[in-house]
Structures are given as structure tokens and as C-alpha cells.
Length: 160
Image 1 (tube, one colour):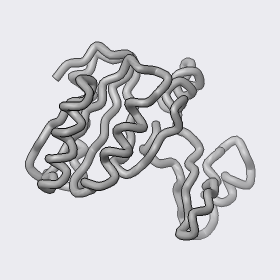
Image 2 (cartoon, helix red, strand yellow; image 1 turned 60 degrees about the vertical axis):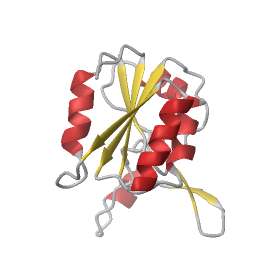
Image 3 (cartoon, one colour; image 1 turned 120 degrees about the vertical axis):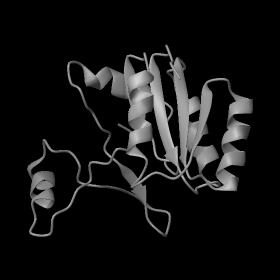
């Protein structure tokens, strides 16, 4: 697998057959359209296989890699995709997370000379109310939250 798109987006999956379609469509609907989505199944369920196949049929920018279950969470499979990519940027999204339409455009703008950037995550509670996690490490209150006596981390790979 080699892609020459501006952005390769990796979407690892195992058994989220219902949300993966929404997650991938939120990637495909970006303001940056020069992208390739690589769905990596590690011991994927039959439902995920069917959903991934459908997504590939709907859009040629989607690739599906079906692999047996690996130790841990399939990091070795992701590494293989990253090393094979010829894209200028590599992005990552979980199989049950959504992006705003300008997510990639914003991340490309922000990355500058950095090697890694991440968005400030917006989560939705059980009642449907959105809330932010304290992830902006330029803010002293966010740093204090992370350094609390109970170790915490809000820097997720999803959206990087």
C-alpha cells in the first residue's frame, strides 16, 4: 500500500461496525479532499468487514486492510501503513469518533514546523451535552489537572 495523497488517515478497528461508517464519512467530508483513508482491521468482526467493504465501494479514497488479531491494539499494522505512505501528513481517527468538516484543514494550518499536533477534544456526556477536556497545555489549569495526584491524560491519538 502506497498512497500519494496529501494526507493518509489511519482508522484502526476491531468491532465497531455501527459507528465506523459515521467516523469514516466525517473524514471523507473534509474541506481537504486530497486524502486516503486506510481502515485497518485487527481481528475485525464480520460487521466491521461488511461496513469497511461498503465504504470502499462508495469512495475510492478508502482502503480496507483485513488482518488477524495482533497483540495489543495493532500498532504494528499502523506502523506498516505509516512507513508505506508517501503522504506529507499522517492523521489518525478512532473508529467511533467524528471530525468537524474543517478538522484536517485546521490541523495542517497549525502543524507548521512541528511533528505532532492534536485537537482539543470535545466529548458528549450521557445526556447529550458537549464538554471540553482540559487538554490545552499552554493553560496552567490544564497542566495542573494533568499533574494532579491521580495521573491523567487527555492527549488522545484520535484526531492527531
